[in-house]
Image (cartoon, rainbow, N blue to C red; front, side, top):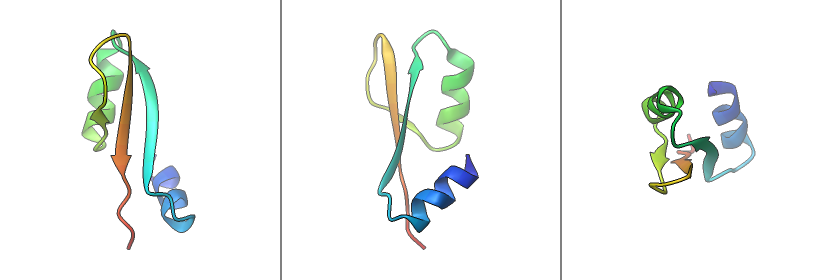
Length: 54
């Protein structure tokens, strides 16, 4: 994941996003630990993380 975030920074991305099934609690916990935030509460969860430029 850090490679993807670094790539985004080098390419002027402002956020990173992913989708996860709401029942996949282990993945959700992992993604939240990486700084992603939930954008929906049912069905498929869309998560996003703002990318801070250095």
